[in-house]
Length: 373
Image 1: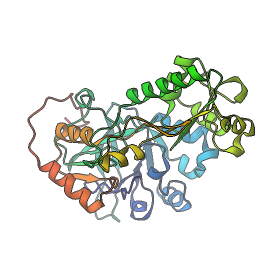
Image 2: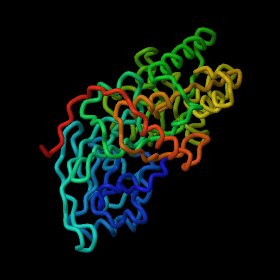
Image 3: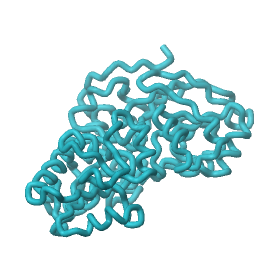
Image 4: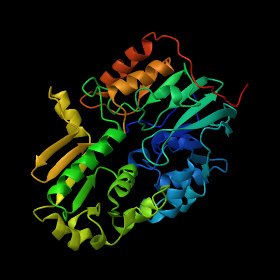
């Protein structure tokens, strides 16, 4: 969970993923994605008043995040004053923005180039690259980048002044985490094995968040030709995700696959869930990390009860993936944005400082094209 205070110290007047406290002095805001721990204060009256008090205040995000907030505002309950200030930035393209005077006239406005890069965390999630008079800064937000793929990320600069990093699993106790593709294969194999024994069994899915598991459900639809039964709120959420048309249904009697939530959401499905042959699959990662951290060797798939599995599925990078990312980017300094598993923030800062001070062999990178020449 993000503990980032929102302040990009290199560029006063800019705040990212935090809309409370001292961030209310900023005029330019950025939202990396629509998970609530990155929206602290976003729905508050104080933030709405802050925005309306400044004609030039703006919030920037990806098109998907904007569409999600617009079409699903009954879920997010964002004040209209906030929605009116949101502007979409196209990814993989440098945007020249003006940051207004931010210190009661003591410092004038300045210009900054901002580029959005895909973060691989959930639909609409992006990283921000800031480039201006005080150097280049990268803010990853929550992200998942696999080993061997960082070199292919177009627009990612090297040697930034600072890297604001998702350090969720920046601990040696989480050296590796199965990739999304591996996790999906294990899910499919587990379902296939269960349905061979019980062809008419229902399969139930539990997850830690709502957005981010769409790839799982889409692949299961392709493999088993079964739609995923969801509630109305979740269906409304998924309708904004690209390529999900036809993957979900409100009719629990028409499919074996269910991600319809708690008992009160569907009595019919609850009866199926408590039958002897039903299989429940929980998509999670912390149990996997904990067992490995305690010296064990945790498999991707764990049977925790006769018909209940926990399958590792992570939307955050592992320690080895983060080390490779840092080694490629080679930042002058790193700011950890998440308290890593079993580490204090002070310890995380020490580890990231040591990592940024390492000398890495020079690497070629994709061309970075900031607004300035």
